[in-house]
Length: 473
Image 1 (cartoon, rainbow, N blue to C red):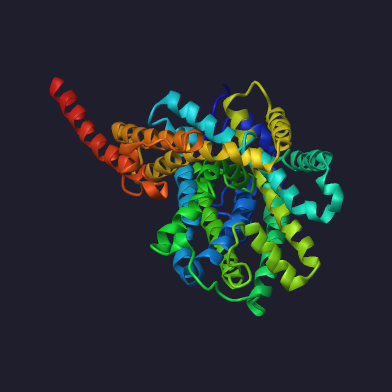
Image 2: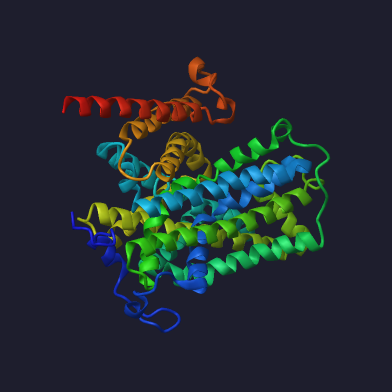
């Protein structure tokens, strides 16, 4: 392993960043090193970059479907959605920025657990799941434009090769993401979404659905929260912090404290953009309620709205939006995961890790979207609650103490989430009486009570151990 610099980044990760360069305003990195922040313009660019890394196809389709199904309860459901789809990822970015990396945060539990958990998260949201899904989802939205040719098996292979070749080429310089996403692809994506949503506001394609969907009748706010939980952006937050920090340093900040503060500010900017986009997309779904009251797919809702507003051009608009969103996320994930593994396992360079991630993702993408989604749910359901628990602990338990509180909270959370994920994925009819009777278990959040109880019990154990140690002296 290479040694870490004073900014917390290894030499391997630093090599991935390239040499210092002049920023967009013509000021050298050396001149900007004395600055305490990037200012309004620089912070906005980094925030848009982070938004672009978060906002993929899954983010696009959830809010419109919520708007259709929640009907008159859409405002309350959207509020719950924003808490989990925006609030939790932004808090996770803050926790990582304050700690350094995901391993620095999770090491407080156990070094071996930290190693395994970090690797599992990066592989799950990377080459084993999220990255292949970006190509297959893009293809599904582009395929209607290809006519009969899109149904041929070789069409997906050709598309995925082109998609990943472009993504790899753009991911070769992770410290330059602000130039690509912050100033070009990110703003373009926002502009296209604003165009579509704005058309629906000016000329609504329909009206609210006649009845509130079953899932939103009892408690629309909680149902919206659970819907946002499906974005899985808390896991992505664990990965993106490192690359965003690299870009912040490239733009002129060098002090670790200043870098952490700027990452948190940029996370807040990304959160505001996400919230506005989600509100617009939920309104789009709300206004399509009478047109597609039985919709079960958010992509279909967006496509239908675009067709109503723009006619045949709408299909092209939707394809470009999805392709751009998926490409942004793909590039961001390749950069983030490649930088982490180059830092942690530096026998391979960043470019070699990025190439390996790209090739594995290319191979898995050709199994098709249905296959990928089939094995993704159990894997993500097992990891996501643990990630939330760790992020919350990182914010409320700063410093190096209370190791038992960390261990018991995360341990009990993991037992519940892994057991339920395995059951739901491989034996859905199996009953788990103890776990199924926990509060919020019917909302896939039964892990909350074990985590809270573990935290409280850990504080008691920590106090007892400390008292005995002091007495023994």
